[in-house]
Length: 234
Ligand code: 5RP
Image 1 (spheres, rainbow, N blue to C red):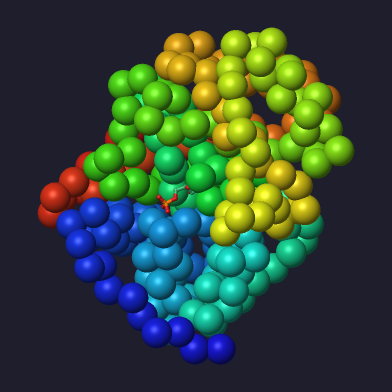
Image 2 (image 1 turned 120 degrees about the vertical axis):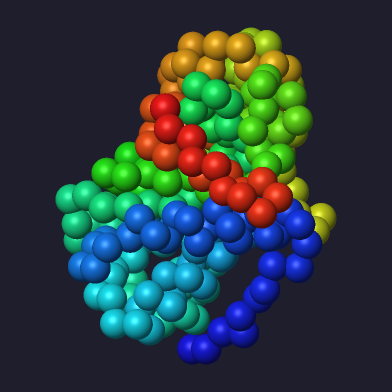
């Protein structure tokens, strides 16, 4: 398969591209690479394709069907997540992050595989444009929660019990379905001032497959701002 290369066409896209190029410099020959999902990761996948073209032996584990198709279009070899015990480096985007390295992910609906891949990863690199860093989590972006469709009404009542409201995500007039055949609830808890406690409460609700709070998973956050990239370490 071949791909038409997309160039960054706006200041925000340029920030994404800068962060992605910086992230790819952490990759070494013979590594297993986790590929996140989303518009920022596009640039990283494009750059990894160039590494392959230059002779690096890399194998990749994608976090979504869309990412897999994109990676294949850049001739990046794909392997099964069950064929390795760990992933060397993963590059993924985020919807929000705060100074404590807590992320909200799942805007594209790939949060479940993204969390599995992040958990398997030794060096987890998050790439972002300058709009993604927030002081208060959960205000600008709702928290995506992947649920088993059979349990959705029950989970909605449990989210209310925890002080949130939510709606079932739809796309083009239909209920949005994840790569696993599940649904996404976009939950509003207002300012999430205790993400760890909320994460634990959500993990206890039967029917929730995964929620979009990523805590203690990121090792490096690279943020494009104007024409520079900031490297943020925990
Ligand atoms: C998908 C994600 C993405 O990383 C997140 O939505 C950021 O996407 P983008 O780079 O397009 O802003 O979590 O589930």
